[in-house]
Length: 461
Ligand SMILES: [Zn+2]
Image (cartoon, rainbow, N blue to C red):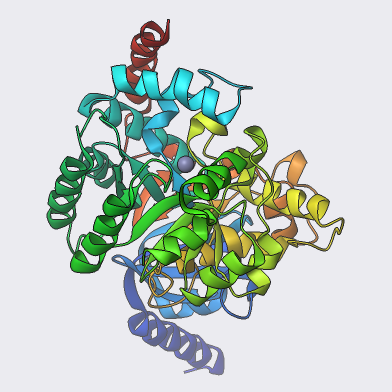
């Protein structure tokens, strides 16, 4: 046997052995810049992620993943970014059907003349199914993998969300006047309890109870919501300190800030998330920090409705976990979380007169792992780490707008738009591949939404 033949045999044998030792997994996403958003903000320049079933099993350099894992399916990221899916901590998904219905109005006018009447006449189980499918399509297309919702018929929203493959923390609304799914808050609470029991221990859906706000519910109802959340161990979600009007109302009724009032009635407890927290005093911020209340910051909605500027830097300094949200599409008017990250960075630079405020890595954390922390879900989602659920997106960096690229994290905040997302994976399931949404019939979803808009138009005429 010649030395060359021997060498060839040895190489062949070693390749054979390493191939045998490779673990077969369901999916490998490779050939991308992996922005892990882990504790060390680790970025792997040519990396890959191995996924088996619903879980991430390894995050490493592409050649090391190739040596250790064989995917039954492989997705080539084409040199783009592989990152955790975005976490929208506040929206009202079906309100996409009110997108652009009424703009440029004061919040109370907008709510009382348009949104509440339109909701009273149109919101039904069918409305929320059609709206949730449209919202899910938009979220999958723009890289959101988990969203937090507050609306009516939340059980229908949950069934629809589960079918689309998205992860949801879904809050049944409780409100102090008759609404399409409940004549009284007590009916709303009963509905919330049934819904929570139906989805207990679900893989994708976390049911929650969602009193609309302190100014639309009485003390007794707010306390009952807290008690239900405690009894069923589910999250409690509400709007808080969104506008100056709300502060005025709290002052007149209770001689306290909205935050101090909720604290005084024992509302803040485990897994509590508040949306907005725009008008909070230093003492309010201390209360939110002490009670480990998560905050959802919604820069676009706050700007569009001129609600004010949430003191995000002060809250973060005080130890409050602040995630990002889009709010409902009627006050944004889209569900693009890349825009939410960019607008958060811009707004707080301007507000603080300091371009160092909310730098790009912080904006990405707010859109991913801080959202997970605000929801009490950071053990499961929010970063690319072995053992977490496989909620992963691939973002193209190939367009003129993305060229050249010195720093992927900078591009994610200051250049990227939702439609740069190529692939969206939730719980290990590929929901969109190369811009083709696989879990929804896109033409159907759009046609249904357009048909529903005629009913909305008639309702507000
Ligand atoms: Zn809202």
